[in-house]
Amino acid sequence: MAHPGQEGPMTDARVSAAMLRAAFEVAERWLAANRDGINAINVYPVPDGDTGTNMLLTVRAALREAPDAPLHVGELTARIARGALLGARGNSGVIWSQMLRGFAEHLAAYSDARPHDLIAALVNASRVSYAAVGQPVEGTMLTVLREAADAAHTAATSGLDDLALFHALVDEAYASVGRTPTLLPRLRDAGVVDSGGAGVAVLLEGIALGLGRRPLPLLPRYAGTEQVQTSAVEHEGHGYCTEFVAAIAPGSGVINRIAMERELVALGGESVLVVGDDHTVHVHVHLEDPGPAISLGAAAGALLSVKVENMQAQHEAWMGSHADAPSAEGAVGAEGGDGAHGSEHTGGTAGTASTAATSVALPPVALVAVARGAGIARAFRDLGASRIVDAGDGMKASAGELLEAARAAGAGHVLLLPNDRDVLMAAEAAAREAPDFLTVIPTRNAAAGLAAAIYYLPDGDAASMANEMRGVLDDIRCVEVSTAVRDASVDGVQVRRGQAIAFLDGRLMASCPTPDEALLAALADAVADHAELVTLYLGQGVSPQDGEQARTLIEAAHPSLEVEVLAGGQPHYPYLASVE
Image 1: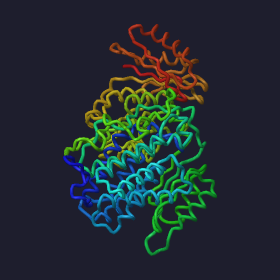
Image 2: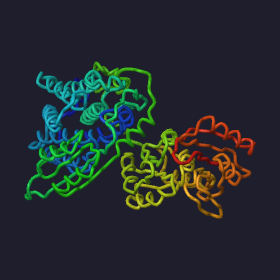
Image 3: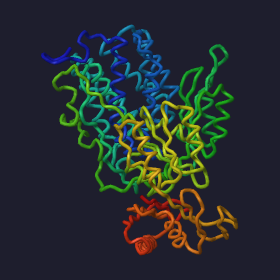
Image 4: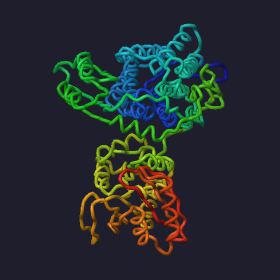
């Protein structure tokens, strides 16, 4: 039980289903607060920056499966594990779902549980998750759960009280995270700890705080300010991260998970995970071609969900958004490498008890933007965008991809900036699928999108921000300069193949020998008497010297304007410009 004068994890030494569900809800909020920090350090095996988000979405899927009404602990944990299996995202989410499966299996017959029962369930969770991974790697989330559960189990068998038991669990979890760079050279070289392990530690701490009815710390463990040494990040190469859930009705046979895993390996699959039971499996695999894997799933049963992501595009976007940081081994969690994460960060699990919980959650409103070019993407991130959608060269994002990106932002509502006239219809189709969740701001190019994004506030009101963003579109003129790919006559302008062409707010305005001339021709119509600022984004292959020359030409033509030049990196458009 608790130390005298302190509230222990369970004052009656029994945990009901309602208490356990409430603890998982606290863990969800604590993971939400740490999501960005965990995302920032993900380098293994694919640097897509999504570990925190994937684990958070998996936890939320698990909670949705469990009703609010009190249940037996065994029934509650079975439903949570089932929800996690069906809703798991990414490698980390799939492995966390297997940890929950092992947790639920141990508690299947329990109507309520004691603290040491929960620790024994975590020990089983570790065993099940190791068995689910074909080739377990130490220095990952598997290691963190195993070492934390073993430490807590030792405390329980030593006769320590409940408070000390959960202290041992959480302290060892963070200590294990701190040691992960010593087990995985890739982490050591990148100067970070394992992101999946960090997620497990955060979740365990959240559960312990929830069971003790204690407030969440004011500051997250992982603040999102850490940087990865990108020179140390290896890449698996081209290919697709493919996930699907396949199911068959009970009584109609079984799904052979072992045979499916072997077939995926034979197809050349890497990072293969095939988890679940005889009737439902969740599959995660990296392949050059996702088609055969999906066909394999369809042959095994009905496909309940399918997700395919281009890992090369993920890698390029991730590398473009990360700069090398000063070398510092274990930049995240390093101070907790000996289990001594300071109480000034979290209040520990041993501080003064309180019954008032501090709610720490993701921003209620997230911003998602479609963008090409590292500089453009970085500018959107700097303005608060949590997800950047880049469909690839020559491709346009689909409604499904936009909706998936919005959901991955992990917020209650999402403002979407399509930033392309050819993507606007797909964005509106996505919004029709989730009208209470997704609001589209009709930005037709990146320059307009960046002007609108200035009005984003994570804790703002979605409707008010949407109105402000739409309003600014009425006050901004946008110029796009590209190269004609064929002869044509458009909007009264004769165009010859290879000439520079300029659009103003989507309408072709000029065809000129050079991009500079086309830019100036369009700006002549864009600049009104009240205009004050031109922001010029330099496209792929445009040098800083070219940008300075363009600035000089604009200032000469419009002496009253302030001109800002930024590296955008967008393909096909050497210049994008906004006039405000």
